Amino acid sequence: MIKIKQALFLIFGITSFIIFYIGFLNYITTEDESVGLVILISSIIVSVGTLFATFYISNNLTKPIELLAKRMNEFSKNNTITKSSLDDKGIQELQTLQSNFEDMADKVGGALEKEKQLNLKLQEMDKRKTEFMSMISHELKTPIMPIMGYLQLLKKEELMGKLNEKQLDALNEISISTEKLQKLIQDVLTAQKIDLGKLSAKRDIVESSTLVKNSYRSFYPICQSRGVKLNMSVKASEMVYSDIDRVSQVFSNLISNALAFIPGKNGTIEIGAQDNSDKMTFFVRDNGVGISAEQQKHIFKKFYQVDTSSKRKKEGSGLGLSICEGIVRTLGGTMWVKSTINHGTTFYFDLPKAKIPMENFKSLRNSHAGKN
Image (cartoon, rainbow, N blue to C red; front, top):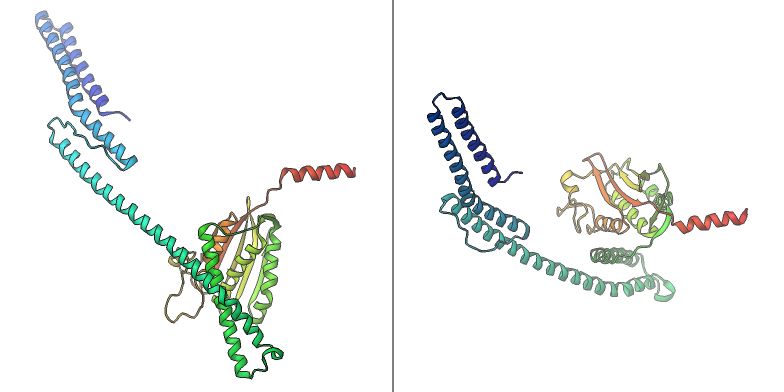
């Protein structure tokens, strides 16, 4: 890209040459040699004067513009400018431009400083929130175990005596509520570990079809008892580098979530896996109520609920999908959702395929050599 100084020299240089050329052309073509000489000398004077004027204008006009451009580049890179006087050569437009630029830089700098302070405060608040969640979760987890222990003891007649039917019903309700509370505490602890990057995960080589079949076998009886059709679709099976228990946790959350939103009659859930280049893509598909495009933007945020009304029918803390996404991310994959209102929802997540180490090939080759 050409600079202003170069453009001025180019324009006025061509102009000077044209003036000189016209004078020279008149000198060699005119019949009156003296008149031609006068025109030639005049054209040379004008040409030289134009070049000097160009040099003067270039130094007095372009230099302050270049300095101003340099300050703008400095501000764009560092969000700061060096305070120094700019010789505007008495040009009102340059003076106004410089003044407006400095005002803008001061305002932007102030806004950036406020944003920085706000971010620090938010980080501090987030840290305190995490510490609070950790403390509360651990404090709640401590009394849960003896409560569940005593509940089991109360159900044993030989130890605590026989209970009547109403007492047993009340005991079962307490047991169900305690289990829900225990799951909530566990979810909060898991979410906290994900936030801190401390979620433990194994790195085993396992066949992708095994991950799908395990979840299918676990949920088939539950689906049968509820009249829900559970299908399995494994279009390809490859070895993946992952954690069997964590993947089962993801499938469990997604299938449980699907069970909560499918219709009471003709409910269908499909789970499966398909090849996707260097990864295997797993999915859980249902024919439920669907999720709107706006809700899909927030679906993996912690504590987000699709139905936030006071009369919502679906229970849950809003941590399930956030935990699923965090687990998949920890395992080196990604998770996403596709859904249409009244046409069902499909959650996808992919996991990297296993790369067999070179030493495995060597040991395999050596074993074959020994057999031969």
